[in-house]
Amino acid sequence: MNTIQLIILSTLIAVAGFFANCNFHPEKAENARLHVIESEREAGITRSIIQGEIQDFRIEMSGKIMENNRSVAEIKRRLHRGDRWSVADLIRKIKNGDESLRVTQETRISALQSENREMKRIINNYSDLRRQNWDTFKKDYSKDMESLSNSLTSFFEYSDVTNTHN
Image (cartoon, rainbow, N blue to C red):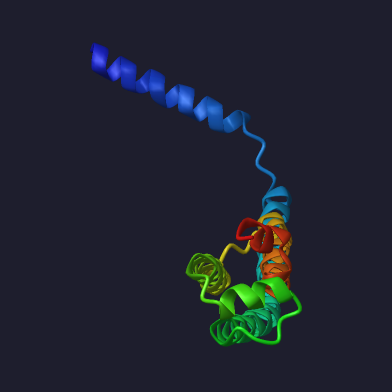
């Protein structure tokens, strides 16, 4: 026997010995296969649930985004008219043509309008279906949306706006 044949024979004996010592249990393999199938099914159900939650959240946030758009339009309308504000000092300055104040306010409303557009883009493009990521996103997004809505609601209530331009 030459060396190559000896190596091949030794390898075959080793492989045969390895397989002879393996304890193959068909029932364990079937249980593992069923476990994988069940896990995949549960993951699919979870993804479907999260997709539904995302859709519901998008609808809810779409309403808030539209409300923010209405607020922006109303602020711009009132800013250009310069009347009927609760902050009399601000109205007087706008009516008297204080351009620096007008520019400051227009810059602020433009920034808030851009932020509202960005919020819309973010919610429309969200696609991560992992539960933990979705829950974190939803919490952070809700907080940011509330902050934006509050900024629009209290646009002319900031003391720094009236005090800066006295």
